Length: 192
Image 1 (cartoon, rainbow, N blue to C red):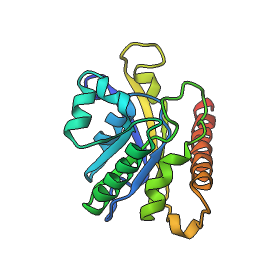
Image 2: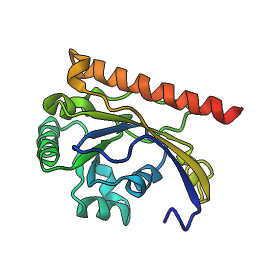
Image 3: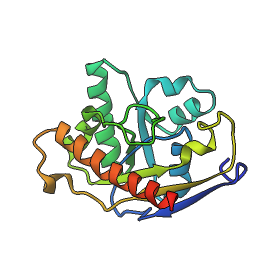
């Protein structure tokens, strides 16, 4: 699909790890998931909001590959998803989470929801910060499919235990800051 649309992807960073990791990223477009699929070399799943299941084609695909869905406001089901996520990590799958809670239309990285980090806190899985830049140009910017040049930056791996966060709020703020800095740096380069 990306080839048909002539989407060119510039990748910075490592796309292959010897262990399952949790990819934490900003969310600019519905194409972010397709871009991750196109560049990664290990099996992974997404954790997303349950509304994704309603999207034609994409929803069915997410279900078929074993992605996990959060029901907003349902603490019991959220705990079940975290436990299933732990199981998937133990079975060698990496996990992708977009903790902004939805696609961002502004030219910034919104605050990350701390609940997204409960899985990481329980497993002490290592984190890879992911920064998408210009993926919204594939569709969302003009509400039509079009070619685009997209950048994705896979940052240095972060060991959750070494940072000694007291809670998931601190983890969310730290990762949001890391990704926001990378996003702003890309924006500055783009203006030159």
